[in-house]
Image 1: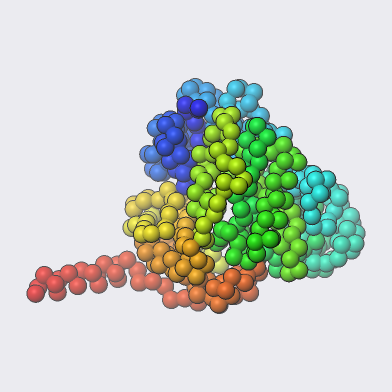
Image 2: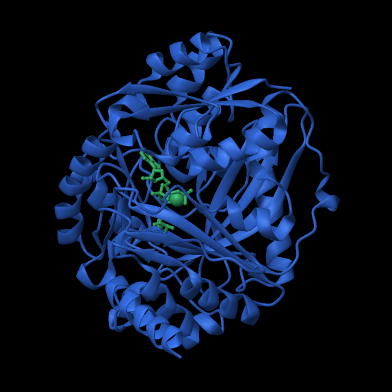
Length: 472
Ligand code: ADP
Ligand code: ADP
Ligand code: MG
């Protein structure tokens, strides 16, 4: 088994990995930027090292991180999500220096990180793939030609895109021309590559993804699917496992497809195969994520499998501990991504000091976060500050529990997406589990909620109540 792991990440996922290490008796090494000096992952790890003053790029410094891992006596590196998690160079650098990279092989990361290559690989494996360009587009003329062939609307996408960026829908030639320049510029800025491709736009699809696990002994299993259709601008907000919109036959079918996909590329470790489901019940392969996902939590909740622990075991060369027929699921789990954003103000980031925080608790509630009372959220990173995961045996009860848990959570000093989620939970279409990726856009009035009383107001109410009580 591994003895010591360097966690090449920050925030809640770093804390999540530290927790897995602690349970497995593995020492954890955290890294942090100067901006992250007071971050929770720094306090929780067995050791922590400051790696620089550049808030973003220090977490991306492949050679410095490999050097540090070796200097501190680590035998493995866990990349989390984002940052270097899908960087094939990093995986390769680890391997060359005899460090275990906790993820799939560098070649698979490289291949699946290129969305056109991934599409071609999946087509070859017999998976249904959306119609689109053969590979990357060489010019705007070619884009217009392909769009004409497959028919509008089309999606113009950055080949190495991620995190919902570098994707634009185009309904007509003029729009495609405009977006062609935009997406190329976005892709160059965000991903360092200008390549773009086209695929048919599936109008108002459901986003269904399958969690898979694979070891180095040829075993591949799936842990059922997640429904991530509640998105804003192609970014996930609420995720559900399993999808309340699938029947059992669809569930088996999509799980099987994901296993075929993973086997066909020699996949190892944890990964996710993302599909779109159209109104006619057809599934299309969309992309493969070669890392642990933000929403792995809900799959853990319904199956009882600790995905991060399984990642570590598999990377150490151990066999999967479960056969497919041993994977049982129970009930529903919903994850809410609590973002430091103001929904009423175009979801503008709302960084600052957390005046007071307490986690929701009680039955069926899990909170993964790296915030604490008094913590100052640095403005350099992701706006997601916590994940609230609720579960119950039925969809109806999971919704009720979600409402209760979100109200139960105390998070003051910044604006968050919590009141917006409470409105979504009340929506009839959500409650009967009929929604697609257009839900947020189709329901603009959901941001018309009244804000919760501010902490000062609450405090004065409590103080008044206590004064009257002691006066008795
Ligand atoms: P998930 O697919 O796990 O739901 P997201 O798409 O929300 O994950 O991405 C998780 C994090 O990783 C976000 O911070 C996102 O910005 C980042 N990310 C994902 N893909 C890339 C990429 N190709 N390049 C840079 N950052 C990425
Ligand atoms: P990322 O790497 O950023 O996660 P994806 O390719 O997974 O990018 O797409 C992100 C989201 O964009 C999807 O969940 C979906 O809502 C939307 N999307 C992507 N491709 C299409 C498509 N062809 N038709 C309709 N929606 C799409
Ligand atoms: Mg995706």
